[in-house]
Amino acid sequence: MQLHRHRRRQGGLQLHAGDREILSRREPILKNVPTWRCREPEHLSYVLDKLEDLVVKEVHGSGGYGMLVGPKSDQATIAAFRAKLKADPKNFIAQPTLALSTCPTCVEEGVAPRHVDLRRSC
Image 1 (cartoon, rainbow, N blue to C red):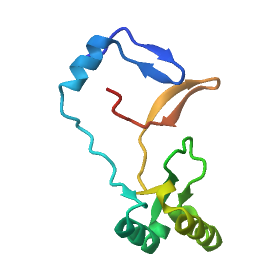
Image 2 (image 1 turned 30 degrees about the horizontal axis):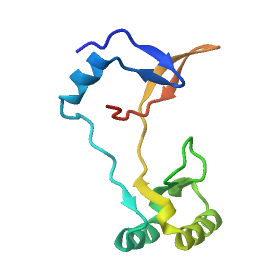
Image 3 (image 1 turned 180 degrees about the vertical axis):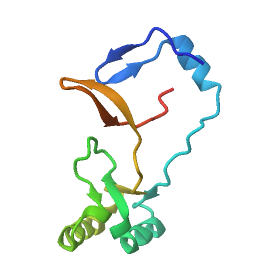
């Protein structure tokens, strides 16, 4: 399938109605990342036990702000984040760490790899 007539719009690819209709009739190939919702007590318990191995994000966050990457964090950072998580668990989700794919991207210096975050938008 080839998508056509696309254009850039505020940081994302805008699909035209015909393309969205084609995509909406197909089953997704990529699976969703397992996600623990810390507002649920059993999820919170799991996340607190595995905090060193998980990525924990604010539910309203974006761009990598306000998050913990457990495997790359020191013990003091993990302890501080644990306190934030216990104080307001409904504000956080957790996911396993993933190796993100990259794709060639045109930048001022030429072509460079950039991480790709694929999301279903239709």
